[in-house]
Length: 507
Image 1 (cartoon, helix red, strand yellow):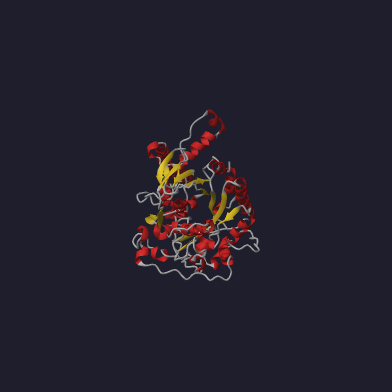
Image 2 (cartoon, one colour):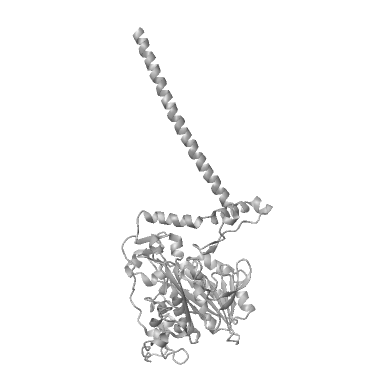
């Protein structure tokens, strides 16, 4: 019995010791948990306090090239409806101090786990079948058909050293001058309807875009360059044609209406094998369909072939979805041909350049391969004036430069050299022309690089960004008896939301 009691006593002692050890471990774990919660709470509280310090909050985003949300104005009505709290939440998240640095670091962290030469951003897309347009030649083709049997002009004379540097351009400031300075040759719209550019062969794709890796999505990245893709929508195509036709009907007898649809970079730089695997739609066929179903009061400005003839030049950015000013220049030449005036040679302009530009493709992906291949923004200063007046989103009107020196601006903001960026309204008066001629450009951001080339051909140039201008474009055109209304929109504008916005902003 004594031995049994001794064993039970030892067992009880061991059990108590085990309980004490377990209790110590639990207490240690509990203390550690409390410490972690305390640190997290302090960090959260500290971060919240930092977030409410006005002086630390940025007002604009260089990375996304936009104004950030402003602190909402309180009202009892907005508070009761919940709108005030929603706006407060948006303000807090959108302009939090260090937000852009955090996003950039996150992109670098993702890239750290595997550098990808080819990436796809977006979801798998398929376009509708594009209706075949019978007997609808492009405007370019009409120049061949008009005087059948006429011989095209001789090839343009190669540029000399003097002509290559005309107008302030040189090999140092304009590395592309020798490629294009004498394209016009002796032929001009005024004395010869044939432009040598019309007869230039369309070169094959000169691109480093590979065909290996993932193939489906809305954005294709390959070897340090990104490419936009396009997918045809029958519904949106018809809606766009109806919208432009409605403008022309409203402005009949007041303004000539032109429509310029701008292709995306993937059309020119992705090979047929990549396009096929991405299921991309043919933008030229899509645009021709849209032009064919527009009211005859709308004059098309097809530019796909005009750009394709120069696809081996720097006409689209690598890290941004826009075309370059050089791409916009070739579209301007096409508009001049259709409108009937003589375009200036690219060497006539003073060329300025801004290096180290990272655009929308980079800001939306944070891709390290794009960060390693920044773009150069090239701009051509109008010959007659570089002064304009812009009305900002807050309603303030100010004098601005058509081509602004943005050399000291952030690397994400360089594209804003053109007409002050995306402003609701802009006005330009040419001091060298007083004949009352005028044009109105209805555009999104692609139109920014195009507008400067129009300045030298009109007495007055009006510009509205349909996303922000709410006073009515038709109302503006009628009020000022504007001669030419020009829609300048890229293929991404062929969406129901944007088309409906253009319709809503007519009056």
